[in-house]
Length: 282
Image 1 (cartoon, helix red, strand yellow):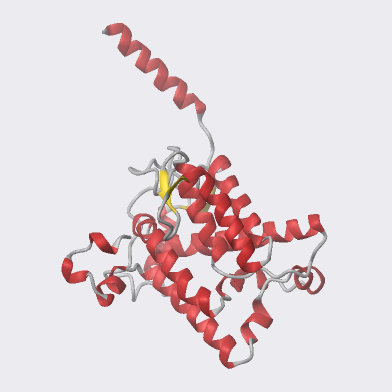
Image 2 (cartoon, one colour):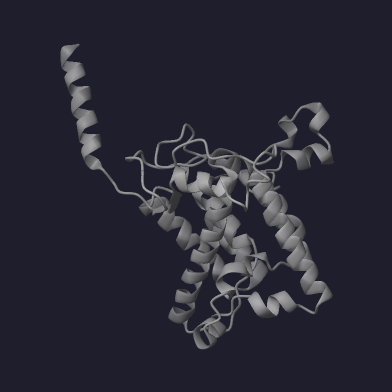
């Protein structure tokens, strides 16, 4: 999302807000609500929902794995929704609002699972994990892993850097801000998604998403101009792999959700053979 390329009439705050997809607006509203709850009620939400490994292991408070990403300071509550908006709006428009929201929570949960494993490895169960930074790090790292040699600008720094080093800089920045090792968990998840699941683990079937879009949660908002429906097969090859690079596989026809995808090297061999035959005819 680039407001500089918007028509002149939309280069206002209202125009910018209208361009933000519904899913990112929803995540921003949740983050702000959580922030004000913490301010007005002496950190009530943070006390109940922040992910502290020892509370998960000893007290089995599993709900801490699902909502800790919304706990932000004033600085984070202002900047992180802005960063997410400017970096991920095009992604939501491409894969659809419902898929984006589900994938966001799915990635958040996996980050916390990996974080718990790391806490066991280093034998430190008292460092909390929170904030939107880690989820943002995963999405931005996937973009960088898709085109590692492309030059990208990191935030507002006046220089371009190779995309392949930006994820490690994001981990360093996250560590300096939070004094926690949860950015490492986010980087591990991004690496696994990019190298073993063709850049996206969570791939729901079109039938499943259409049921959700027509269900009671979204049927009243799906007609909004900022709500984007799923219009393409997530198991197919997108037109722009920088947005959602996945491998072309057979479409998943059943109900429910497909986790990951299978690799089919036979197709590659067949394509090469066909190409060889065409060359011989020439």
